[in-house]
Each structure stands twice: as structure tokens, then as C-alpha cells.
Image (tube, rainbow, N blue to C red; front, side, top):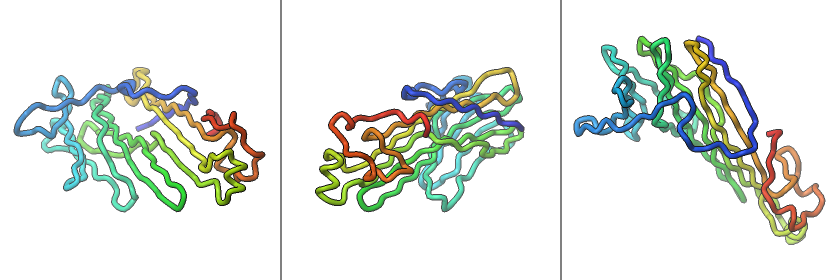
Length: 215
């Protein structure tokens, strides 16, 4: 199986619309199976992970449901994104979201990844791609009144990134996966690889979010 990943930088914020190439999973509307999410034609049904059962189950019409178990101890919480991409070869792609966070004195961060799962026609479910979905990071930048004055009162560096994912239907058994991403930072001029206190004093005009095409 070959996965082709195309990367593109985008200045605009990716939309929250249905990812290209995917169809929605909706409630099965059955009292006996209220947790199941299915495609409109009921060809594919998925049971999302729950706190008491972190596995994700996929009804592929085989002798039993296929499933995928998130890795233990990696610090992430996994959630199903209610979409699926049926493939020409008979399998499908599922989207998961892996969430993690970190906190420290004066700042912290929260991050999400796209996790793409491939459901083989025979029922095997494997992870085929992990890619950035979005993230936000805050880093303390003032340690004295002098620092605060030099920073025009902006005492935290802030960084944000957002990514969108989709499929290009080129007629192949495994369509290319396309990831677009954009990043920005606040205040103007700050970078993760530079001590922001070494920069020239900030002015009011610098207290703006700016795109970071090199992220």
C-alpha cells in the first residue's frame, strides 16, 4: 500500500468543513445501537471510543467487527472524527484526532494531530499517517518590569498553527492525502528559535498577529 502525502502552505485559516474526499458518519438512530455512526447507505458503521473502552470498532460486513487500539502511554487522548472515505479497492480511511497538552511555569500548550486509519477489505485496521491538525503555545517573555517595558506590556510569546486534510480523487486505489497548514505568532517578530528579549524593543504597532510561512 502506498500513501502519497502532498504538503501545501496556506495563509488563510483552514475551514471546518467536511474534509475533501470524506463523507459524514451519522447516528444509526437505533435504540439498541445508539453509539454507532454510519454512512447514509449503512455500508460502513463505526463505534467511537469511550472512556471505558478506548478501542474504535468498524463494521465492515466481515464475520466480526474490525477494531483499532490506540497506543498506551503516549500522552494522547484519541477521538473519532465522524467522517469516512470509502476506497475503490473496497477498504476505507478513517480520521481520528489525538489530543495532548503541556503546562509549565508562565505558559503551556495544547496540540492536536490528524490520525489516518486504513481499514483493509479483510478487516485489518492500521495507522497510516499522523499529521499536525492544530496547536497553540504560550511562552512567558517578561521576568522584570524592565522586560515588560521593553515588550510594550506583551509578556507572552504566542504561537498558533492550524492544518486541514483532504483526499485527491485521482482514480487510484489509494488517493493522495493532501495537508495544508498555516502558522502565526504574536507579537510581531518572535520566533521559537530566538530569545525574544534579544529583539529590539517592541512598539504598539508590533502587538499584532503575523503569519509565519516558514513554520
